[in-house]
Amino acid sequence: MRRKFLAGLLAGALASALTVTLAEAAENHKAEALKHAEAAVASGKKGDAKAEGEHATAAKTHAEAAQKERPNAHVEAAIKSLDSTIEHSKMGHADVAAKSAEEAVTHLKAAQ
Image 1 (cartoon, helix red, strand yellow):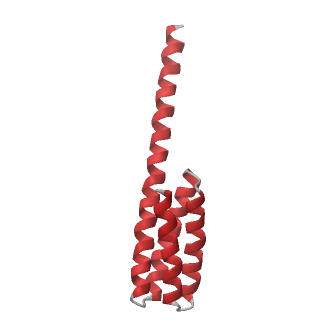
Image 2: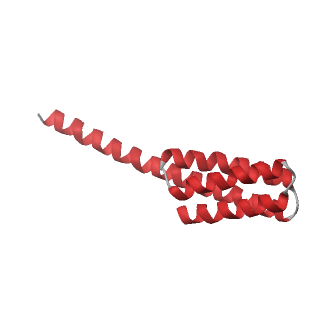
Image 3: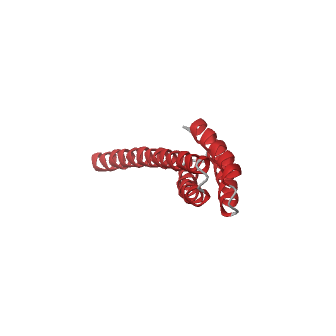
């Protein structure tokens, strides 16, 4: 009986640790997404659509990972804004892409 109790206690402790680790991972992905989204904005303001698209793509990768680990409406909206950023940067529209990247930054900050 005592052995079952200890096994259950250990399983519960491991489950708690895993939950905390997943939550931390989601937060790290959001932080990385925010960092790259802010870099995309800065690149767009400089008129560098290529770098803007690269940063937006990296931001989207992290935002999608965060969304998968811990769904959030603001992260979902950020992903849509990043899609727009990527699309406009491919067309060379750095100024329009920067506005979309700014929207992504706003949503990612709201998700924090």
